[in-house]
Image 1 (tube, one colour):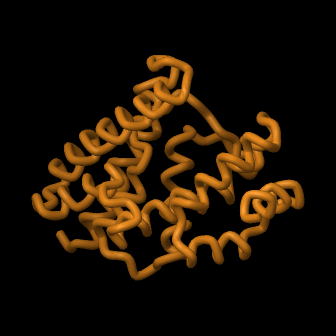
Image 2 (image 1 turned 135 degrees about the horizontal axis):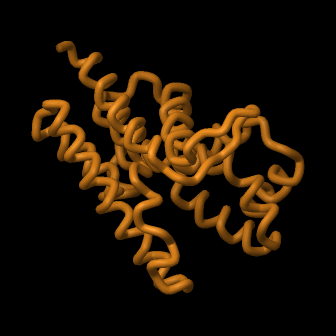
Length: 195
């Protein structure tokens, strides 16, 4: 099997796993399992932002949220500390599932470890590959999820979240935001966060 076919096979396994997500999201009039749609959006954004990325980055991007619904937010305290604990637990959950799938697809140990390293967001702001994955995460959030998030929260909270998001983004990713097709309200909030 060629490496390209092996990556394709892993994508297929990731997608089959995420297809089990009981939460749905409608996009362009069609209903998708939420995390399946998220993973497709992640791959699409990477292909636009960094099309020549190595396979381990493509794999890490595709399985960022794999099995996310299996650890509900409600299983941790509904405060900032509980949120951070939940997010940390999710990272290890995603890395475990990804590692098992990549092993089943006969990937070498080095590739599997690189993918898990990226899912765990190790050395963020110091490792160029981790930064690239984080940039894709942030761009997908801004492009596809920010408008809905903003409609459910007051502007001050959204601006605060956006400031934190921007701190995690590279200069190039921030420039990319200006190329996204966003509604005027979202653009206003981004402008306020950048000020």
